Image (cartoon, rainbow, N blue to C red; front, side, top):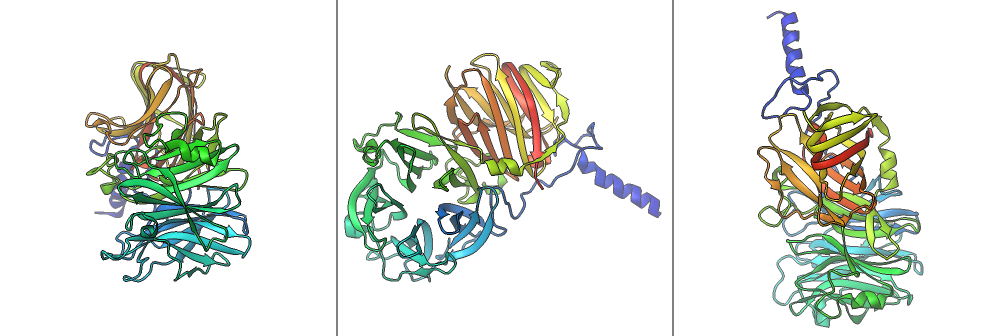
Length: 532
């Protein structure tokens, strides 16, 4: 074979994967060969906006605003895969000034030896003492294979003068059994300063078979006194990763529900700390009422907050999924894996004290490189266009060109009635057997619900177990939608009243669409931007 023929053959082999929006299973020649870019379908090893270290994953973030350096430090449990047997989840950290750009600080607090109480580390919290100019990180020590006489979990502490070199206190131990709580479920210490100018520590634990948040108080961060039960858990809940803070005139408890059927970040609110504590005092629970709310979806867990005095952000992790299967989202055997990417939102407080999550300005600013949005395909019926606004009637869709690894997508949808249904899809081609959609469905006349579905001829439809996010229908039926993607991480915001974090593998390998499911909708201001 001569060189000219070799070059022609090689060029053909290179061009074939560039066919823009076809299914991998049924490749076809597409219309726009010249302007379609081929992207890898796998995630990058290191991710920066929704942070993941080059090696391993982020578990249980412990955010803290450093009053000395004037930036946020987010400690987290470093999850290696595989983790060493018995000794795992050392505490690592990143720093950030804006919740969008991170600098790794590496390992701060290592695991203990296999025979030590903190062979494995668990969640905690950090606080700075102005009195002795030291940082205190309280954390959970998990004993490897404890005997009947030993504690499975104890609260421990490490201190530092510079946030670089940390010293474990070998004498401080807070044990549940000393106060009538569980020996083996006694974890996730959270320390905050109350209006009484004392330090308060909450510990997730059991009292008998009942889940509770135990409370301890201190004047010096070294000597702690039992203060009883801060909050009794409702039903069979276990309040993991508690976080208490005051925002405006309201006190909040943010926590993560351990039960596999729920696995979401939730909150309670009260005008005073005593009112907050009373939310579950009747032991029957007051849910659903005006004292409790949900934050985000099952794709966001272990959320905890920190503030620089201007903005309060919440950081949690978005789990990976076994086999990179987009449908492994619910309870066992389809449960997501522990740990993933660090995801940040901005807390939005409303006049009635309710909380929602909104965009982080620095993330929005980061996605500044505007991209060409090209209509690759539209439904044969039910689509008209006028001055950049598309009208979709009935079951109709607009298919747009491929995305990159890092995207900001924004568009506005206006529905003609209170019951019109719309959504948007990823990993969708003109002939895809499966693709993945986030759908805004009517829950009732006044509420909407975001659902995650697998559509297409071979799709299973609604993915049971993922749970949706219910939010109030905008009175003018106008939905301003913003979507951020960072490799497989997908974060959706609607009108500052709804946030929805999800993981969708393969976003960058195919086209995306906006869809109507009956009724009539208008779609305008479709924009895509990226960052390098």
